[in-house]
Image 1 (cartoon, rainbow, N blue to C red):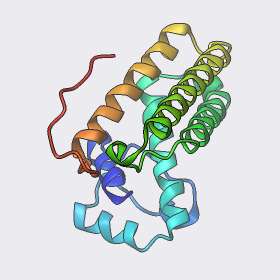
Image 2: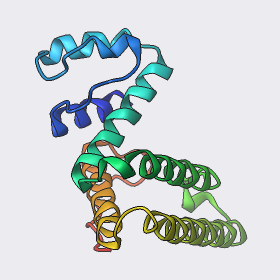
Image 3: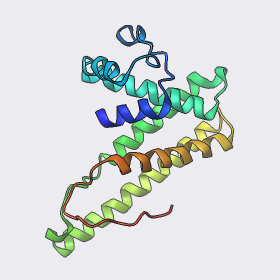
Image 4: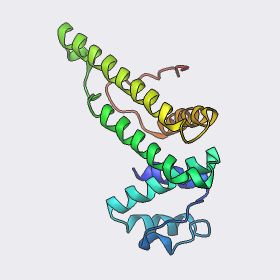
Length: 173
């Protein structure tokens, strides 16, 4: 969580005016990394999570150049979309060693992965339709494109865990 937070801070230059009392007094752009780290470490996990959410939302709004009149509605839809995606992903536990599964267990796990993948896709389509009621289709497409790039960046920084120690080639979408 800390690595993600620091990555977002570095990548997007602290363009957020935080709204909660504890973080609103800070000028994130003028703070050096050590000061930012100290402030963040003094936040509760809930406050850190909320701060990360605000940074992410601000970054998306800025990147997509959302009109001021649409920001609240879009942000609500976007957060709802992300929460649904998170809940769907939670239905699949990726922490297993495929080599220890029986054929039947492996087939069941594979089927489950397809079902969860389809639910994620269905949710994405549902929210793409909803978002197009607020922002143009081009911006929805840009959102999903930037979402993929952000995920790739995070995966580059995340140490890989599990049993496979080989390097896997990147797959193109």
